[in-house]
Image 1 (cartoon, rainbow, N blue to C red):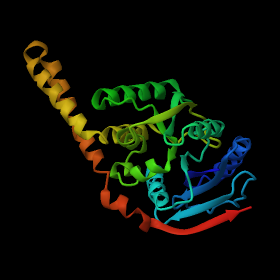
Image 2: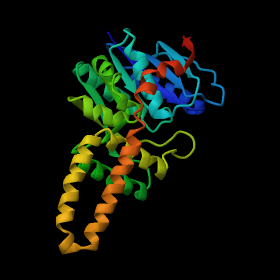
Image 3: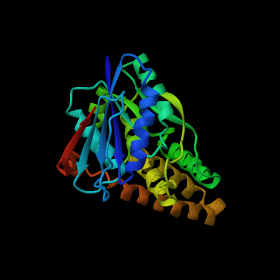
Image 4: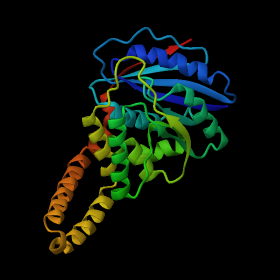
Length: 290
């Protein structure tokens, strides 16, 4: 019997969490040879938790309360370090608590993980739910990421990690800034399932254009050495082209320098001390059982 832990960060959105738990429950009920527990990382919510009832197919739900608000990515990073010290699981599933990571796909993740228990599984985005302008910007983000890192990163947080890969990621400070970038850099073999980005259960999406920009730069910053080397080559080429395309070449060089400065500044979010000491931000824990 393989043991799965589902890790869900939450900030105030308890109504969505309750709905998600019961949606997960209905989608795992016919999975054989698997047991499920859930750990909720309460990101210092200002609203008290709703009454949490444990569904029939989930053994227990633990709420780990953070002392200070850290943000979604850092709650995941904390959760990975927290669980790296535990021994009572085989796989870790990360998913958002608002419905955008569709619970209908959790069965696909688990079945793929059960097929080959030594390889982590990511949910490859084949369709998003946002409007056309946002989707256009997302494609630009993927293109820029590929050009400057050489990596095609087509997944987010929704994934099922082996315990071995949890242990690897728990030592990588880049996880403090970007989950998907860290996985792509440090986990060399991955399986995947096709995934459609869902809609939030309640309220509009919290992914603003500003947050998309930070998300994009954070992923690219994980590969900052590659970025700086490729940018240096591009700057040399553009300098050679100055006499032919003049102001266009100079403008592109300025943009490239600004881009690299942003990448450098964003890379400072990878704070090793904060990451290693993230367990000090943990408050009390509450465990719910049936």
